Structures are given as structure tokens and as C-alpha cells.
Length: 429
Figure 1 (cartoon, one colour):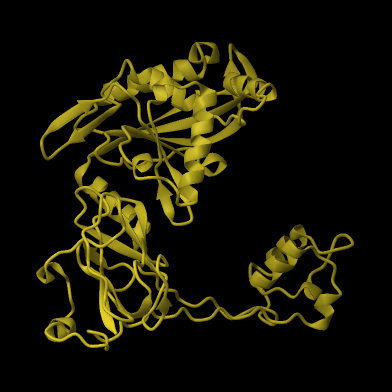
Figure 2 (cartoon, helix red, strand yellow):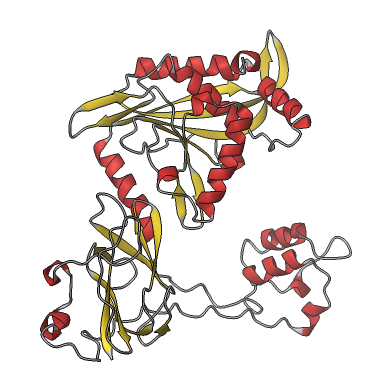
């Protein structure tokens, strides 16, 4: 028997450490060659670590959320026979990078155990993460409840609210959501506790991985950037008519949302307002005004907000933009987006669709100097040429770095954007 030390390889140029975002093994597990050991994260790119040997896991470097230095021992594996030689990995290989023992980050116990290698772990087994308290199972409905007609959605809502459906007065042949609303209103918002589950327990969540990266970036952005925001209303009635017409004749093209049109308008307007499509290195005190528009598109994933990048958006048609948005958002949500696809935006657009509110103050992602948020589209009465009309309108909220962008320039940029968005023929020409 011998101990094989799997060291964290060099997983990216200039990367000094990586964060453990998931363990797929635990001490005592039997692992096979090429079996996945852990997910390591750096700069929003997650890399899978695979075992180069087969054996039994003897120790792990840390817990989820810990930072591990490149070259440090990540996993110790007990193998049969002599341990394989630790070779220097080739470019983009997942084999360990050999470093002197001094480059490792062993625990106090490991330091004491270094002179002699034994089949026992060099350190005490890492403390397992506390298991969340099991969620209480929903109470079994009483017999009268089973006889009440209601859809599965209504039954689930009733369970969540702790409402006995047998106590709800119905207005038709079955209990509907409106009946639950009336029950709540009649009871002043209170519910019966007879059929409800236990109160929701407190939950402690460690901030790790993408969520930690987001927290750090947002804190740094608000600390270093003096934000100012402008909100402008846009009449998108004609644009929505144009979008509907193009979707009717789209053929094999993806269905158009309003986002490709907005990206096209932003790219056109930036040609005259290059201070918007810029990045600011405030350490070197250098502003770079970019000729190409590398548009970051904020995308919500299960792990948090990610920003895949559309390269050279100014060269694309709305159909090409629609396809690229779909491809990148799918890659981000499934964790398949590459490091290149998640880096280097010169401007970012975000949208919450119908949940976008009427105004917002988006946070700039440094080193960018501006960002825009798309607020919800709504139909409202508007006076046009002295006549009252129903028009489709939406607000765009622009945040700028006041060290780089003056209020005058930001206001004029929004007006140039407005002229394009409200005139689809000009926008698409």
C-alpha cells in the first residue's frame, strides 16, 4: 500500500488558487481511475477534477468554500502497490503539477505527520458539513379533505398555507384559487393550523462558489464606482408590431424577443457615444474606448447570475443575436459555458422581463463603465397628437460610472437610443 497525493493542477493562466464548490467523494470511498473527485471554481469557470489513480480516499484538503492553492494536495488516495510517479502535467491536462512540499497548505496535524507516511490519514478526517434538518413531511390529509374536489395546484397551495380544504366554501363544483383567496380574506390572513405543517425552520447557508463571486464583485463595484442612474421611457408599439411580423415569417430562425432589437440599438448608438462602451482600469488610471461591442447578457442560473458575452454584437443581425442569446444562455444554465464565453464584456444588459418593475438602478460590473436594465413592458394610455391612444411602453434604466461618463453624455445617449428603438425602420437599416 502507498499514498498518492493528487495536487491541484494549473487550471488557468495567472490563477493562484481555486475554490472547492463541490466534493463528489468522501474519506473512505473507493475511487476508480478517471472518476470525478471535485468541482473547482475560478473566475466563474468551474473545472472538474478527476482521479488519475484507483484506490481509497484517505484525506481531503478542505470543505466546500475553502480556497486551495495551485500545487497544493487536494486529495490523498491509498493505492495498492507503489504510488505512480507524480509527473508535470502538459498544457490543459488535469494531471497534478509537482511542487515542493513547502508549497502545500497542510493542516497542523499534517505538518506533524509529514516525516513518516503511513496508511492512516495524515490528518483527522475533515468534519462533515452539517446536514440540514429534514423537512417535515406534509400532514396526511384527513378523510374529509380527500373527498373535496380540487386541482393538484390548489391542494399544494392549501398544504403550504395550512388550510383544510373541507373548511373552504366553494363557488363551483371544486375548490379554486379564488376560494382560497376568499378564505384567507375572511380569516384576516390567518389559517387553520390543524392541517398545516410545522413552521419553517431557520436555514444557514454558506456563501460559496458563484454566489460568493457575485457578492465580492458587487461589493467591490459599489465601493469603487460612483454610480449615477438615468431612466427613460420608450414607446415600443411599432417595434412590437415589427417583432410580431418578423416572428410570423421566421422560418427556421428562433423566435425573436425584444432583447436582440435592444442590443442592436445599443450597438448602433455606441458608435456615436464611445464613452459608454468603455472599460476603466482605475489602478493604472487608463480608460479604453472599445471599437467592438462585446455585449454581456445577464442570465439567471440555478447557481446565481452569470454573464455570457456576445462577441462583436455590432456585426450581427437580430436573427444572429437571437441564436447567440439562446446558445449562450443555455450554456450558462447547464454549466457548459467556457471561460472565454464568460469573460471580457464591454457593456452589460440585463432584463427580468415582466418582473422587471418600472425602474431600477443596475450595478456596474467593473471594469465596465455602464450597464442598462430592461424594465417591464406595459400598455398604458398615452396622448399622441392630441388624441388618447393605448401604447406599449417600457423603461430602460442606465447606470454609469461618473468618473468616466458625464450626465450630459448619458442623457444624449439615451435620446439617441430612443430615436432608434421608436423607429424600427431606422433601427434595422
